[in-house]
Structure formats: C-alpha cells, structure tokens
Image (tube, rainbow, N blue to C red; front, side, top):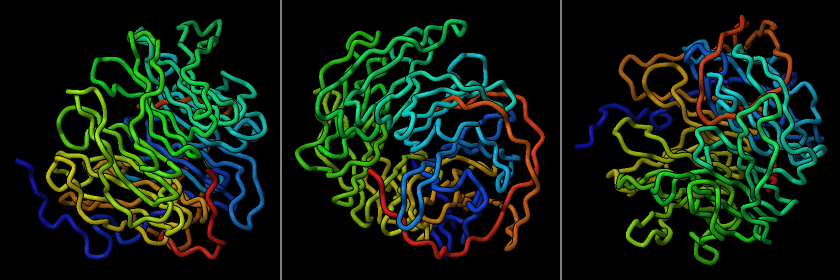
Length: 452
C-alpha cells in the first residue's frame, strides 16, 4: 500500500517553500552568470550533497556573451551553501568551458571521491575530466580537444570491466561515441574512442544517457535529437561496448525539438521507462518499456501546460515510494512537479514550485537540508541565479533563515580543473565561508532566449 503524507502540500507553492533560497546570484558571481545546468553530488567527502553548476557563454536576450564557468558550492548539511563573490571555480581557464553544454559527476579514477566531466560547445570544444584530490580541488585532463560541438557527456561502465567509461555526443561533429577507461592514470584514463552512431541524426543530438534499457544487466545508450525530433536507443549487444544500430522509441513528431530525457521506472514494473521533454510542441511525456517485445510503447502525456521545457527529472518528491516528475520550462519561467498518483504512471495536474524562475534551464532533485525529503534545485539562466526550494513533506521541516541583503565572506577557491560524475563519493572538506541564504525578488533582466 502506498503511504500518504498528510498535510504535505503547502498553501503557497505545492509542497515547497514559499520563497526560493538563492544559492548563488550573478554580478559579481561567475558561477551563476549564464548558468545553464546544475546537479548535486558530494565533492568534499562530508556526506552532504554539494551543487555543481555549469555556465555557458551562449548569448541570452540583450546580454553579451561571456566565457563559461564550471563551479561547485559546498553544503554545510543544512542547505546553506558557499557561493557569491568567490565560488569554488573548477576551471581556471574560462575558454576551457566556453559554451558549456554538458556536465556529469562520478568517481572516474576509482579513488573514492567524485570527479567532474564537462562538454563545451564553443571556442576549444573540449571534452574534459577534472580529477578531485579529495578536498574539492580539481586538476584538468583533456579527453578530446577540439571536439567540434560537444553537447553531452556522461560516465558509465559500458564494457563491463568495472571502471567508468565516458559517453559523449558531438553535435557539429555528427557523432555519438565513448572512451573506455584504461585504468592507468599514468598513461591517461581515456585515450581511444569508439563510434556508436555517426549518421545525420547525430548532427542534431541534444543529450545522451547510459542506462540498462532492456534489463539484461549491461549499459545501453539513450539519445534525443533536437532537429530531427527523435528519441532513440542503442542496445549494448554483448555487454562489452558493441552497440546496435539506432532503435526508435518515438513515433514521427511525437516530440518536436526534444530537449531532455531520463531513463527511470515510472510505472513501478521494475523496467526503465523513458521520460522526455520537447520544446517545440511543449510536452512532458514518457514511453513505457514492454519486456515482452523488448521495445517501448506509445507516448504517454504528463503535461502540455509548459512553454519550452528544457529539463525534466524523475524522483519521489512526496515520499510515497513511487517516481514523480519535476520540470523546468524556459518561456513561462516555471518550475513545477507532477505527482505519480497510483505508482503506475498516472500523473496528476501540474503543481507549481516557482512561477518567476526567469529562463528556467535546468532542474535537479536532492535532499539538500538533510531532513529526509527531496528538495529541488533550479538553474535560472535569464536571472543569472542558482536557487533551491525546500520540500515541506517532513515533520519538523526546517530551512536556513533568509536575509534580504546577503553578505558573503570570501571562500577558498580551488586550483586546477574539475572532473565528472553521476554519483558522489567521499573526500576531505576545505574550510569555506558562509553562503547566501536570501529571499528571491523578481529580476528586471530581459527574458532569456533558449539555445538548442
């Protein structure tokens, strides 16, 4: 039986704090200026999820282009973060992540801490990883220089040898491929690349994700394309990284301008389904996997009450042991969530978390204040802000006290460059200064325009 949480829904914003807490804000912060994507992982080994953010130099509205930044903010365990004027910059060379499109976090070198991966679209077009020394200080290792339109990067064991490989997508370079982990840092962890797909579809690829889509115990690859509007997957045929030709998930124009995807079990049958968002036809939807035919079914709509959703994620937001969905939509400046009503993929109406999330570009879910409930983090590219929203589902829920005029003391800035990772591992914690905890006020900045 699915447990219900009485009194979980708030009176102002459904289930979440009535005011966002500003984790970081631009001018003068480099971390939030043009922020495009966020995720949570433990970078300093204190067992609390920190925030990794990627900011690109893509032009939004009237704002001039800026160089990209990759940075992290330390969580003290209560949802109070280091940020502001001196973020923990991972990249020391701003051109290294100019036009940053993709980030990931994982223990790439198997030393027990979380490294960082990045994919940059402009300038150098590098795919790189940043080695964590265990204290949240990073050193740069370029995997693929001049990667010709790098848009997505992920870490996963694609060949079944126990080490994390690197999966990537090159939009301009028209290829989806992967680098096996050599296991030998002395000669370089990632030296040889294997192509999965170099067809025309790869020229419009938006994201790639590793996941065991067919349930056979190895990692397949999920991909979405923006221009050709496809959701596809590639089967890992032998568990060693030999991939099939493209297999279609979406029907013709199911999703036009696909922007985000995730493999997650939405109907509780033990098989991974595919959650997708599309910008041009304003949809959040999902495809159920059918193990009897080893393929995906027809499109199931979750919501069309969005304007250009740029990011979606599945997570149990209401604590009833099924997977709900959270979204960030760009043109209507909205963060919202959708309750999985029966645990079988029947979703309720949109419940708004924030209606003034200017240029909402990315959303992530993690328990940031250590109260047992999943909170929501948003990257607001139009407002140059990283914000988080406490989930009020727990008895005795507490949040940091906001201030209207935050002051920030300088924090220690790590040297070197970052590395990637989806899941976090321990490392020792540097001494840092207090973070911003402020009420949000609407931005007067011109509304951001999306970049595919």
